[in-house]
Amino acid sequence: MAAAIALTGGRRPETSDRIRLTLPRAFERGDAVPLMVEVKTAMTDADYVKRLHLLAEANPLPEIASFHFTPRSGRGRVVTRIRLAKTQNVMAVAEMGDGAVLMAQAPVEVETGGCK
Amino acid sequence: MAELEVRIAVPSAARRGEVIEIKTLAVHPMEHGFRLDPDGKPIPRKIINAFFCKYNGELVFAADLHPGMAANPYLVFHAVATDSGTLEFTWREDGGDVFVAERTIVVT
Image (cartoon, helix red, strand yellow):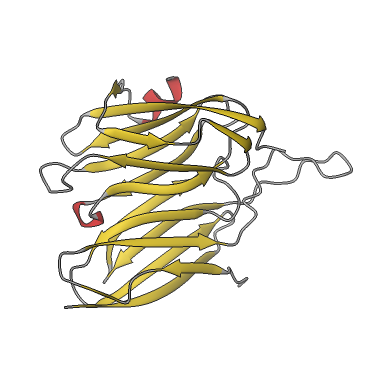
């Protein structure tokens, strides 16, 4: 949580079902774990996700990526692949255009850590 | 300058206002800096640390990437098809090298 708060300028994220974070519950290799994250938003000037951070706090470096959107992004959705050093919760933190900071977490079990 | 092998999937045509899906991949080891070579010396970090997508010059998506991104960084994102023109993709590597690729789109 400390890393998440540091990324959002000190604001504590609120758990929200507006973020859908999808990862496998268990994955053999931690060096390329598939991930999909989407923030439910209209992506209009009044309602959009500005920044979306991915964090894995049990990794040697918790920050994985920060995505920057504008209303012209169309959707607040990203698919990617991440490294997980060990079994842990992956966190997505969304900074919304109106200042709200939202969060979702997903537990992932990995057999082989991804930092070898 | 070194080359970066990239793969980009973007529709060649779209309707105005349509939200299009864009897939990109850069062939890159994303050396995360925590590995040791056979002599026990640390292998220095070298990753793609940023990615940008501009649509007719306007930034529509960007990413700051850290060592927790898997090798061959793969990103799927979206953009609103506004006008015919050019999508410009930029990958920035540790050390400052920058790799740029373009695709065109026809919007009707």
